[in-house]
Image (cartoon, rainbow, N blue to C red; front, side, top):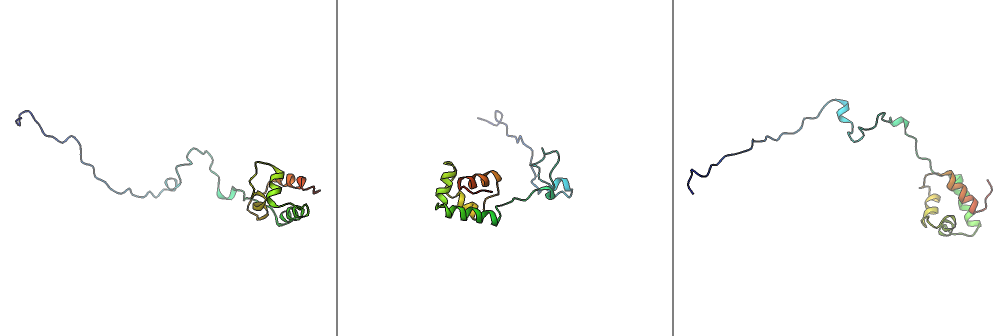
Length: 113
């Protein structure tokens, strides 16, 4: 084929890559992932996680030992869906406090409040 049937041409415009300049405005520095929240929560308004107090942990430990139960046996008595290390986490202070759970543990251990 000759040159009269074939035409060479470039059909795109050159692209210049540059670094994006950092914006100095405060709104652009905030995360855009929470843009759907109408009233963002200030850090002061977040409530801290409350864990079992030492007194409550001691009550559970003493009542469990008095009943002659292991941590695993007690967790199975509370519910069959609870993991075997549930009581261990409570007694270790690693589980957030839940009043319903605390009352159920005391009920299973026959402890009067």
